[in-house]
Length: 354
Ligand code: MRU
Image 1 (cartoon, rainbow, N blue to C red):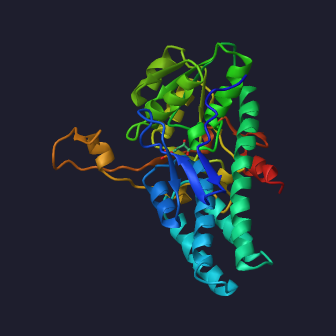
Image 2: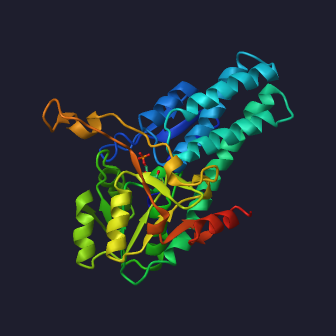
């Protein structure tokens, strides 16, 4: 099956030494590409969510490090000074968004590569550029594997798959994780359908997931976040698949706010609930979800819709961007190494070859 949405969310353009990305702030009204030319611009692109979704943010971090290396190499050719300045930039880039661990994973990988490179400063710059491109290509291959493993789990012909937020091509370099599962499943059975939660407050489901699926002619029904229980109670949902921003060693998973509610409702209705994510989203340095830092976002995301205030002045607001779904509610974690099942401490260790 040839999917129309051959979206490349983020791509290094070697002829210009820039990172080119789809501007996700204007979807679905416009499909616009922007060139990110400096590491500071990359920090802002991640923070303001021009680029978003854990794997895409990871690649943005890798490109950000290549841009930083180019900038620093213009100031010094001394390797020790270069690495000191690069380390500062690495910490700066990692501070752009705290929850998706793919960002830390990719930036750290780039820094380690620079530190361990037995070459000149200019040689290191080229290695960071090349490695960023390699990670881009790997991402698509990994998502296709996740998609194929996940498609095997679809319980019946014509199944209805519910998803939350956007874990699609636009949250990765291409193809997607949760929507990768949908794409692979649809290639085998074109009678499957998707229900997409709108995903308040940033509407990634309404704006981005529906945009991608409509483009691929995969039937999608948009629902508001509070409707999932209603449809599960009517027996209309066969499976839930969502992405992840960080998975702890015990399988606890941070994903877009509202995922936890969805997992509880799915558990109550005995609808299988799966996470689809690459192993770069697993943080083996933490034991449980309690250790995952949760991003607190601008209150205007809650008090306003399209810049228009929807509530009384003086109201209190809290706006965590993510929540943590306890591992007990997760039937399986679909990765590029296959589907991991409980007990996750063991299956995760095994997936990492330990
Ligand atoms: O705030 P966002 O849009 O970056 O959040 C995205 C999500 O929560 C996704 O589900 C997650 O990053 C997985 S993307 C493959």
